[in-house]
Image 1: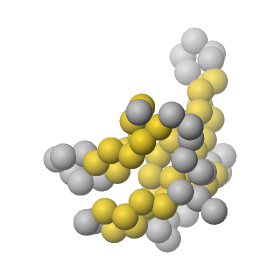
Image 2: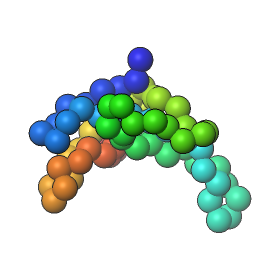
Image 3: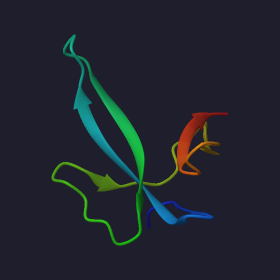
Length: 68
């Protein structure tokens, strides 16, 4: 079951994917998708990672992950 967060704009699920940076290093990125959105290939739903918390962007009202 993916992590779910409710905001004034709707309900979002947490997703993740692995990306390769310019130096060749691989890194895991996390992002929120609105319920009902289809994920691109290589992406998967995710639980809340340890040491992170959810923040809300003041300008857009959208959720993002931040360090605790």
